[in-house]
Image 1 (cartoon, rainbow, N blue to C red):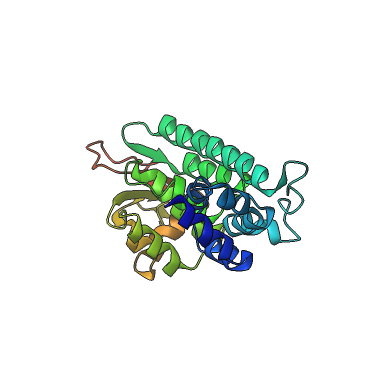
Image 2 (image 1 turned 30 degrees about the horizontal axis):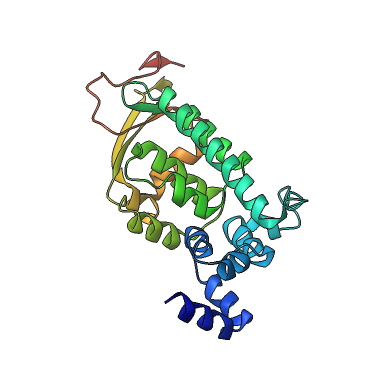
Length: 250
């Protein structure tokens, strides 16, 4: 069996072998590299890991990006990939801890929510990173939502791609409740009651125009006439929060 394997490998052109490897995911490349010395040498090649790095982090090919100059030095592309993967995992773990610490009574204030998205942005996570680290069924759905928001507004990933990723990770039907309070309108010199809105939405609906308003509220946060925005994953029994003075005289 081993002799037959050696014969096959000796007859296999190197360019064909590289082509085969190019269709594999990172974990599959590592697994193939463990099969023999022949595959280990090919799977450890710089050209393979350069391609994998640029597929996972497209900003590496963007000349205007600060990530562009953070390519490999002496460690080669494989070493660069491994080191950056560790950095990304550690950074994503910090974001997960941040959201978990800020989630009190199963709800998250929009300021903390947007801070988590900013944390992902500073690490220059790619779409694949989000799928691997945040689109997990075992994670809090609020973290799934953070990843979704980041992909649409920071990475500009087409909504249909995000929807497909949610479906493949089996988290499309997970729901969140978004509540927001708006300053009451003025009517003949009197300010009306502050407006309270509450909407249960699925992650799948948020990437379509069906719930465009809710995603817009999350993206803008508490600004202008919006006094407060809160995201939760269970129905709260608390009394709705209102700003001071539900009826004021001008």
